[in-house]
Length: 465
Image 1 (cartoon, rainbow, N blue to C red):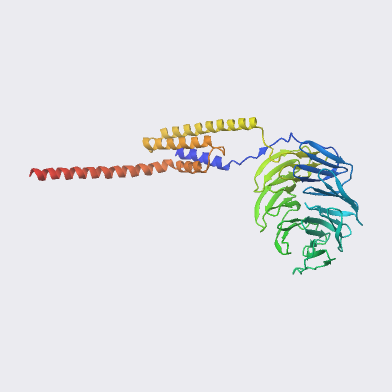
Image 2 (cartoon, rainbow, N blue to C red; image 1 turned 135 degrees about the horizontal axis):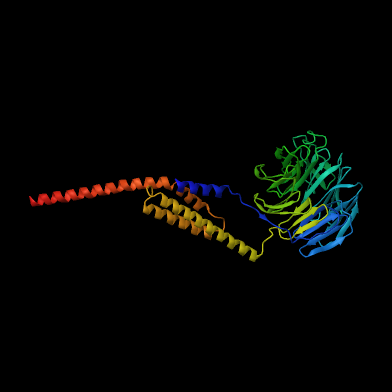
């Protein structure tokens, strides 16, 4: 019984103990002391916009420009910025390609990796500029533009009433969507493919934001606490309602992540299935790259894989306001200090890794010895239930488990060893059954031997007679 109890307790402790993420001190970062309200990133280059426009990379500050920035979007080699009625397009080395004035103050801006700039204004004007600054087309909504997002030749727009519009750059004949949809012609070079009016029926000012991805249009209604995913053809693939207010969202076409006011972070796939959720203590803002998800929660910065595993976390001195992530770096913007984390995975030095691995192996060896000694003591204390052969077999199994554990880096026990321990946990009962079977087998063999002897004696008597 003692053997069983000890091993069961060891199993429970191993299974219940959580996997701890790496606590990283972000000692390798750059700070730029100026007022910023927006941040973007492309590869290893981070762009901060506020009363100035500043670019950072691994070596530090690349360039500064005394250009006031109210809103900004970064994609590929292009940076689109807006302030008041003025719109500009730059490239990552700081060269200004063009600047233009629009009729009304800009309320939303987006740029593609090909340099096409989409602009929305407070009066409902939508502009599409090419990378040389030429006006491709212009369209007028009845109400101001809340959000705009573009990818390749497609543009999605939401207005202040919650209507969603989907445009294509070049001619495709429009069609009518069945759910409260009105379609409009945009000159000869642009088309409104579909318009969705379902969200505006729920609330007068639903505060709707959206993002175009390769697999559809991801929409968040912050006030109504809803998330939607539309296909490019205008079909509503799924919608979700939430008990708490979503404050941030992002997606890469395969995974769609939402950060909530209560600190929860949820990820969905294209079919609307909840992939994973992670809880933080404070309101969570998120940013998604191809392989990673960055989360900012008050003064905590965390890196997650897109499978939901927390890779590392770190504390920041100030509250994180905005962040952006690529596969190579993270750009963070808080009240006064602006961080640039060069390595997303924040790899440790080799010496540190070697010491941690050696320490872990020493700890595992000591734990294995303690478990082995406890098992030996318990075996010695139970001589009635266990034979010498069964105790030797158990000891050999324990040796195999400990040898495997010292060679593996995953932890104290892998899956096979857990199964073996689970079997050993019932060793007290199993050994009794084995002993009974062996006793019955020995009885059978002894009976057969006795029968053979009797037969041989009978044959000898027959021969003598």
